[in-house]
Structure formats: C-alpha cells, structure tokens
Image (cartoon, rainbow, N blue to C red; front, side):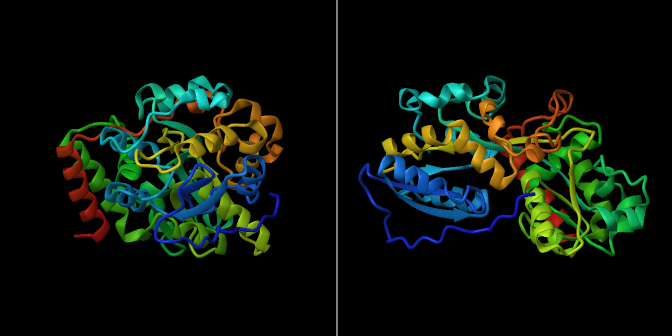
Length: 361
C-alpha cells in the first residue's frame, strides 16, 4: 500500500480551547485523519483548528462527563455514543448546515440509527469490524495451509490458540467488543442479557487465557507490524495500519485481516457535537466539509477504514476499495451485527466477568 508518514497532530493548547466561530476544537482518535485534511479545511473556510487526539472511548467519555471540555467536535464509537446521547451530552445536528448529508449511504445511516435514533445527533465518520489480524507466515508455519484464518477459531479454539502461544496472541481490552463476538461464535444471541450465557462466553475466553499474551486495544498494531505477535482480535483498520507499517519497514512481515465467517460486530465512529461546544457552527462546517467525496476518500486512503459516502469510492485507491475485508460484499455485510444495548444490571455482570477474564482470577 502507498507509503505514508504516521503523524500525530501535535497541538499546543491553552487551558481552555479558543472561542469564536472562526475557531474549531476537534478531539479525535490518534492516526485517524489524512495528513492534509485540517490544512484543506482551514484554507477553504478560514477557521483555525485545534486538533487533539485520544486512544480510547473511555478517555473521551471522561472528558465529556466532566463537562466544559472546550471541544466542538468529537468522534465516539457507536456503542458509547448511544449511552452518551441518552445522557444529553450532544447537540442535535442542524442538517440545514450539512447539505452534504445527502452524500451518505442511507443503508449505512439506517444501521447507525441503531445507536442514535433517527441519526439526530451524529453522522458516520468511518466504520469497521472486529475481526482477526494475523501474521501469514507465522500462522502457516504453526498450523499449516489449512489454518482457520477465516474464523474466530484461529484465536478462540484452544486447539489452535495453544499452537500460536509461542508467537503471541493479543485480545482487545474492550469487554463489549470481545464478549459479543464470542457469544455469536458460540451460537448465541450476541445481545443476550442472560447471565448464564455471559458466563459461558467468559468461560470460553478463560480456556484460551494461558495462550494470550495480553489484552490491549492499541499495542497489537505495532506488535503485529514488528512480528512480536502472530494473531490478534482487533479492529479492521488497525490491522491494516499494522500491515502497512510492516510493508513500509520491509521487514519480511506479512499481516492479513479477516472478517470471521461466523459474523462479527459492525461499529461506527461518529462525528458529534458536545452540548456545551463553544463553536457549534464551525463543527457543522467541518462535518459538511468531510462529507465531500474527495475529502473523505483521502481519509479512507490514509486510515484504511471504509466510509459511508458511496461517491467517494472513485477516489479511493483500488487496493482498498476492492479489498473485501475493508469493503465487504453484501453477503458478508448481512452477517454483521451492531453492538447491543446493555441494561445496567447486565453491564455490572459483564464488568465483573471481564475483570475475572483479564486478571485470570
């Protein structure tokens, strides 16, 4: 894939980000925007941007719940967005200020409405899946040419996990992102609130615990790229970033990603405006800017995550838009499911189970 520089936008900010509609304060995931998107927006609009980054939904949520974050635009993942909308954290979007809304794929927005009824508070930035990233050569060496690389079996079946233990398995440190695919893999409703089935999913994870090197939601990117681990349950775009880094380093490591045949979570990272945003008009202007086909294609070309603007495909590199692991065919899309809503009681049970899995106690 096209070589690129992995730059984080280093921004020096004052204690309170700037006010006034000629300013925009964005808080987004690290390594998650094209290198020139901000520059192009500033040139087109005259709005000065302060761009800060985070690496977990929990960090973003803590900022938002504390209030007065000073940010005008944030990018929560869909399941976090859902409960934040219920908490009144976001402004309803004014679609009259987002004429490029019409560029969005109605089917994708309908799927995203699972998390935000009527798409009232947020719009899709990028989307992806939770699946399996793996080192092609290391897995083949240990499991042969018939390795179940198209399945969660590669990681969740102890028979295979044990054979990969020496080269290293990583699991996301995100209870819902892991438990729901495991429930589905076991043949259960991934959105079940049944404590017994949640216990079964936790027990299934515990059977592979001796073979898991760590639980982490970003370390696996670098470790896959460097050949430090050979398999990970991870997010699609992150695995493609690892593959690109390995190719750029020319270190002999080949990384692949698969959407498991059993089905998995389809998630959305959503652009939303905090209720106390100092510059909401500038935030609307940025959303509208990003929804231009060429602009959002630039971002997809950089981060290897698909977007929800169909007209952007003509501007996306062929090796990305033609890759079924990034832009899945309809039969694969039909096998994906959204993250479910957890009742408070279920969330407490899941937190306890996840702590047990994570600590092995």
